[in-house]
Every structure is written in C-alpha cells, then in structure tokens.
Amino acid sequence: MKTLMELNNIQKSFGKTKVLTGVNLTIGEGEIVSVLGPSGCGKSTLLKIIAGILPLDDGTVTLDGAVVSSSKQTLATEKRNINMVFQNFALWPHMKVRDNILFGLKIKKLDAKEMETRLQEVVNLLHLDGLIDRYPAELSGGQQQRIAIARALITKPKVVLLDEPLCNLDIQLRIEMRTEMAYLFRSIGTTVFHVTHDPSEAFAMADKIVVMNNGVIEQMDTPMDCYTNPKTQMVAGLLGASN
Ligand code: ADP
Ligand code: MG
Image (cartoon, rainbow, N blue to C red):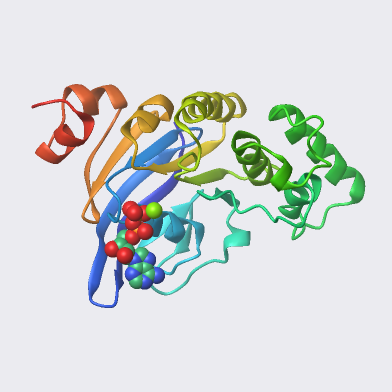
C-alpha cells in the first residue's frame, strides 16, 4: 500500500503545557485510521496540525511525499488537498443546503457546469435528493451530518479528517451513520483520519486504531490486535479487555 501521510515526531505545547510529545505514524492510501483516546489527550490538536490550522513546534507532516508542516513552514490548509468534518457540522444557517455544499468549491475556480456536475455527484453519493433547497434548520441531525460530509467530499480531497463526527447525534443514529460512513469512504477509496473518544465508533470504522494518551501513541494496530493483544494497561482498560 502506498504511504499517503506520515507524521514524524510531532510536538506541540500550549504555553507550558506539552500536549503532543512525539507522535509518529503513517497512513496508507485509502486507509481509514481512527485515533482513539480520552478527552483532552490531544486528538483535536493533532488533527488541526494535519489540517494546517495549527503550526507545530517540532517534527514534520508529510503528505503525498511533500513536507507540508515543519517548525519552519506551514502550508496553507487550502493547498493541502485535505478536508475536514467538524463535530458540530459547522453548516451556515443562512445558506441553503446547495450553497453550503458548494461553499467548499468557492476557492477552486471551477465553471458553473463543473460545479453543478460535482454537486449532483455528492447528492447521489449521500442520498440528498430533495434536500438541497432546504435550510440546515429544516434537516434532522443525520441529514446535517451527511451535508457536512458532502461539503468535504465535493472538493475531491485526498484525505478527509473527521473530528468526533457523530458525537452530536443520538445513539441509534450514531450506530447507523458510522457503518454508513465507513462504507461510503471505502467505496470511493478516500483516506480517512478519524478522531473519537468512543471505542465502538473506532471498531466499526477503522482499518487501523491508534490509541492516544497524554500526547503519545500507546498502541497502533488493527482493531482485532488492539482488542486481543493490548500492549498497555491503558489500552486494555479503554477497550474493555484484559491483558
Ligand atoms: P482532545 O481533542 O483529545 O479532547 P485537545 O487536542 O482538544 O484534546 O486538547 C488537548 C489539550 O490541549 C487540552 O488540555 C486542552 O485544554 C489544550 N488545548 C487545546 N487547544 C488549546 C489552545 N488553543 N490553547 C491552549 N490550550 C489548548
Ligand atoms: Mg477534541
């Protein structure tokens, strides 16, 4: 499998607090990786560094063979071929669904016909027929979540970053959506970096689980290996197995 993203010795502090203390990992093209860890362990910080929203203190992020973040430079988010879905979906309340989705394309200079073709593609992919002339407030939580994914996919990014994408939904919808999301991303071959504090979400979606604690990686393995062979007490405790 071709390596698409490489994190090498990522370090980040806020003031005197060290949040990431040397994170290393590689992600292959088309892989779905779930970063699992307790609240406050640095997951969102890591994701923002990958997105180019936050600069890092030390280490490098390499995307498709090129260094995009180091202590010397941070390539702008819009030049990274990456897109993000946030926990609260972050849809614009005053814009119709159609404009919310197309907003992702605004910075790309595409002609009107190409924009319409792409819109139709994501509408079909995410089953949004009949919804595109509504406002976000007129949609259910699950529908809003699909709109947020559509907006991320319309730019055809190499990597999609998901930060706790389901945590605002009720339990039944979370169970449905995590399976649906994993199926969708696998079917179109998108590489996914997914962050969650919910072990069942990671198990349902990931090819590889990265367990994080206190700014470092405790274990990085297939879901099965993490479960049957936890390398630390923390991983065992988190995944409900014993070693
Ligand atoms: P997680 O997403 O795993 O819950 P975060 O990455 O959001 O954790 O936060 C990790 C730690 O860094 C927390 O202690 C948080 O308070 C701190 N932190 C995050 N962002 C900032 C910031 N912009 N300024 C100061 N501290 C921050
Ligand atoms: Mg977070």
